[in-house]
Image (cartoon, rainbow, N blue to C red; front, side, top):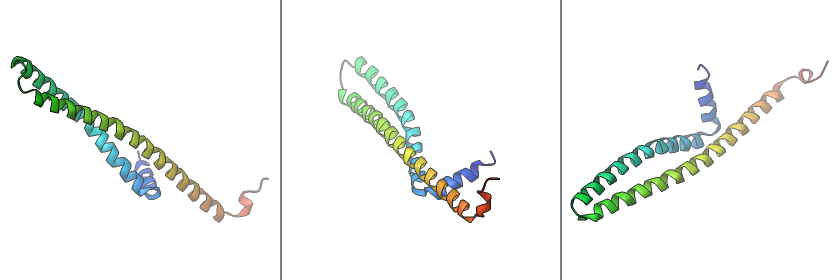
Length: 116
């Protein structure tokens, strides 16, 4: 647990913009399932009311179903984008870590690399 702030700082220093993008996408993909549940509940309630009223006011149910479909498509689309951003972020962090290792290796004495 003591290394978590260091690791987050390392990732932030290596790819600030990508980490911010990934964080925003993580937040959005966390909220969308809740929105799906709420819209599903409202669509089912509206459908029950529609059946009780013998098919009057179909537009409310249609709007909720379309919204539900749009949110589900957005959820899949954002998950795909988040996967791509996570891959780019991992590559940026890996490149930065390689640069740090190379910079450290340059400062070492050559005798450190010789075998006995």
